[in-house]
Image (cartoon, rainbow, N blue to C red; front, side, top):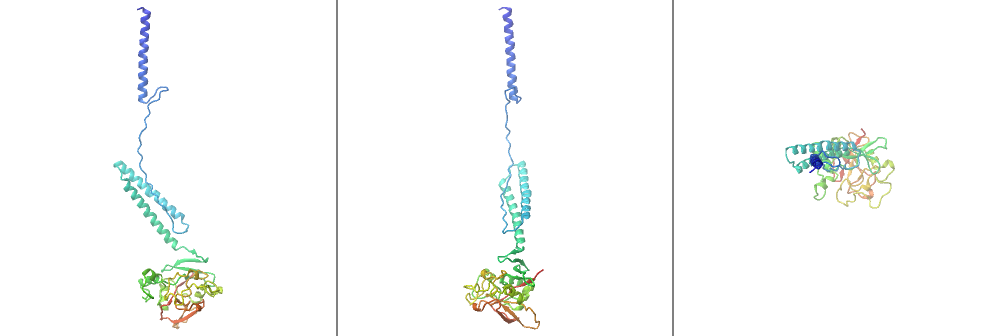
Length: 339
């Protein structure tokens, strides 16, 4: 072999070695993630395990129309800031110490949220209950007094006043008895009835003194005869609480048709111009004298009762009884001055 040929062979061997070294370097760099020119490095996608976040769905629905947006917002903020953060913290701690029991944590979070929002709803209802409202007749109603009965504001007369929308019921009178301010009466009229029905009936067999004691306990007083007449619409020249003409089938409990009083909120179509109900029929109602006579043993009863002939009923029907007398068709309602 000539010298020139040997030289060429040596050059080729050197080039082959360099090529082998180059290929090995490229392989090592690619495998290690460095890459080489257009050859990308091998990519790795790490596996990330996310912490589960529990988001219970709670629907907050106020019972009536009321502008309580701030209260609802505060309740939701408390729920989000408190319960969810606390739940996430529990999950994080549980994850770091072992496998969390997600179902238990979820249940606890939901229960906390439901408890808090239920308590808020109770506050909403209690607040709403005492808020003034406008009745179907356009006059203000509000719960007033220790008995928590609905009262209507009669405010377009010379001396505005509040008066109970309905006759005082057995349920309300029982509260006064339990407080030790009222005497027990034989209020059950007719056949045996359920407790719910009994509670909804107007209290009867109460004397004027009983009625006075109750109204004073409730933080109210008996209405005067003039106030009763104003609530019935006499100042509007109404013959009946609902208007000037008799309607077909008068909306009253009279003529002994039912044989007893009916629930105090019966016959809503018979409510007065102001929205005061059951002024005629059902039970006669004790009133105080507009010009009191301290020594008089007699007081007026107004409106007729369930025994009264319907043809005799009108806004000015009146009777008289001694203060100590009572009857199974005589009850009452209370009034209150404007604060």
